[in-house]
Amino acid sequence: MFFPFFAHSCLGLDDSLQQYVSNFEREKISGEQLLKISHQDLEELGVARIGHQELVLEAVDLLCALNYGVETDNLKNLVVRMRAATGSLHTATTDRRKSPAYDGSVSRKPPNDFLTSVVELIGAAKSLLAWLDRTPLTGMSDFTATKNKIIQLCLELTTTVQQDCSVYEMEEKILEVSKVLNHICDQTVRTTSDPLMSQSACLEEVQLTDIKPGEGLGMYIKSTYDGLHVITGTTEHSPADLSRKIHAGDEVIQVNEQTVVGWQLKNLVFKLREDPKGVVLLLKKRPTGTTGFTPAPLKNMRWKPPVPQVSLRHKSKKSNGTMSRRRISVKELGNPDHQGWLYRKKESKVFLGNKWKKYWFVLKKTALYWYTSQMAEKAEGYIDLTNFVVDVAIECKKKQ
Image (tube, rainbow, N blue to C red; front, side):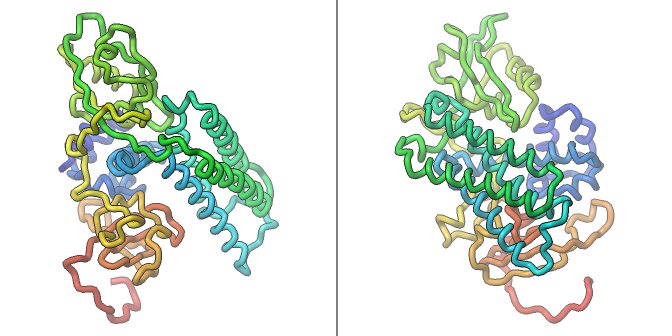
């Protein structure tokens, strides 16, 4: 899968990214390279503005979440994920306070690892909110109350990190909020017996034909803050309504085999109107308590990993399966065989210069991961060492 993948996917993204398509084409960035791309890589590809870099990385994250989460994400797992994020934040703060160099009385910006933990927590909360803020869950009063409380607490987190106060005071406020979030998660898991809690989403292909001129498809679509396109309703007797397969809460994944996750809404609308004869949609459907639809196989997706994703937490015997470097944390690897700081040189020779960078490497059986820190939630890279022999190296006193 070579550079046309990025060019095609970029067509519907933010208009500001179109200027970089030629850079990716020139360097022949493949889908696999795009999956592993970092801020530094993007800067060397000419994407200098941080905002533009984040747009690209967010689009990559959406693709990762789509392919790795469609069969595993459910409300219960999302609640557990947010609970784990609050626990990680509390643990990181407690460990830092034990350090002799810790000084919580100063009024300055908190450490980057602390801010990163806050961002990870908010990210987990956003994923949970995206699930709760969707039909049929929007009609359930207990979930609505949970959603509103999470929104309020996330706003408190966002405002707290911007306040002018001592590091200790800021940490205390954030830990207090995270404690309440943790309580909400525990309460939701304990008290909710609804079967929707453990039902995962699935994919369904829907074909709309016989579109009358000027009639349209009859779908109402809204775009969420994180680049998803959700159907909010259909027009009575429209092609979408008559299909009996399109419902409020469905998420548009593909249009005529083109992945549209992360696209601007105007570009999605243009794609839907591209062929007047009809359109083929791939929809991500949330659980409704029924099994009246059949999941579409993942092979229909335009982008897919080279081998199926394997979860370390559930299938430890297959822990060397290929996994997204943006979804495996250091903590999830458990007790590794070896770990430590190492310098790594960039592999690609087409980028400008050969630079060394320090990473935290973790060896788990035949899987080697590297991270930017010992508490990182996302790996920067992964190597399968099944066909390699790992041995103790001679002492190296300098980078070579």
